Image 1 (cartoon, rainbow, N blue to C red):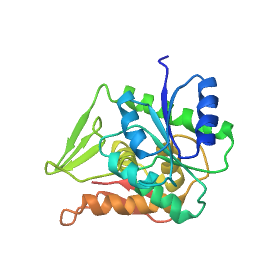
Image 2 (spheres, one colour):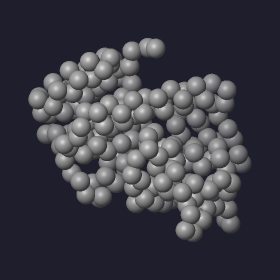
Image 3 (cartoon, rainbow, N blue to C red):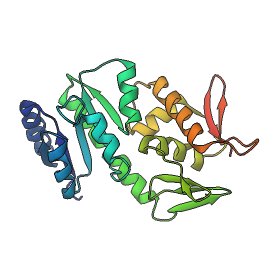
Image 4 (cartoon, one colour):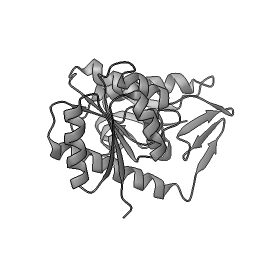
Length: 228
């Protein structure tokens, strides 16, 4: 198996050293950056996953994630001491794929990281046969992590695309918020219903409606399904 590459971005030197040493023992190739500027340079090394602290001086983790998200399609896992639901939602809106609260156990971090990498491998393998699918005015570009409507990119974040993709390729099937959370996040964990609700709302707004046509239906008391 090819050695996976991890980029750690955290302004606290002790955390960078601790994470780097632990992940190298786990068999990863690891680079560390103290701020967004150093992290930007490290992207040239083509990491497979980014561990990103939110509270950094200058450009914080949320802003940097937003700036790179359109061109960087690898998993981004936020590290933060902020525990409120609103903070987690901000992280996902910025384009993060996971939100890990400090302090955390190394075992949990390793498990989440490995799950995201496995999921990316499955996604890559599954896209070798069908990289694009057109249905009416919508085109789903699986390789580019985007949906185009009438030829124009609707501007989904990575997580929004993953939710839309899940519903699209399983059209007609109802997914609970818990199902969506676990499949999109790449591991079994405590589902955050508010995060899924917010993302579905944003997906609907970006896709818009075509007269009477809706793309995502709410099945009250259960979850969501693609009907477009």
